[in-house]
Image (cartoon, rainbow, N blue to C red; front, side, top):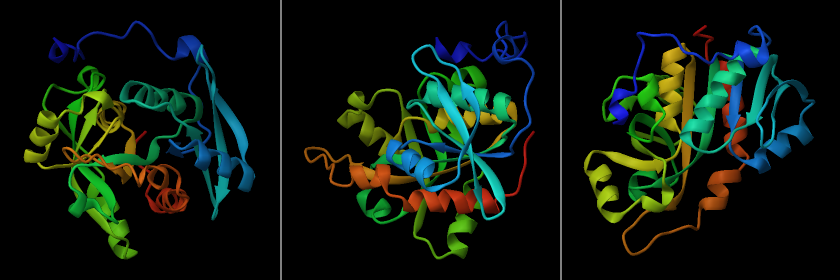
Length: 254
């Protein structure tokens, strides 16, 4: 049923103007932060200024800016999961004008030898969630368009990285042995919970997305490893790398 959800022949009934008024044009680049530890560090260590707020009935999401090497970069603490993370990006674009998004988070490794000690630059994401089918034609995988640009960035700085397919899932608790093996056979090296939906929505609205991941847990049959979860989620090296990406990536999109 989900593959019938892509409709570009009729107009949406609900528009963000109904909630926020006219679109704003305050910044061009924005970081999507998953770690509350990193988020609180940014608020404490940088001279941040709140410029907007995504309004949600169970708790609003402030959007901030910080100065970094001559750039003004927005950031916010995102909800987790494809639908919420992707939808928030659209609202942040409307509230701030940001059209280039740098997203960095953690993931589960499906190939320990390939990902150990390396940043993961996804090339495609398996669409094991629902939102992407409303914003992109139905197919199993969605291409991550800026992976090669990020690879050039990492290579120029001698940073360890690996490129490969990832699996976006809506259900961490249903990463079963058979499904893990199937995704691995298709070339997936990691599993996470946002990328397919976020890339689909960025493609649909013409935003630029730069995404990199760090593996925390390792999904191995009979030996699930969690030792690296805290570091993958909260290490500050990801933040400063994301800031450099935000500073160096050319503005595109609308």
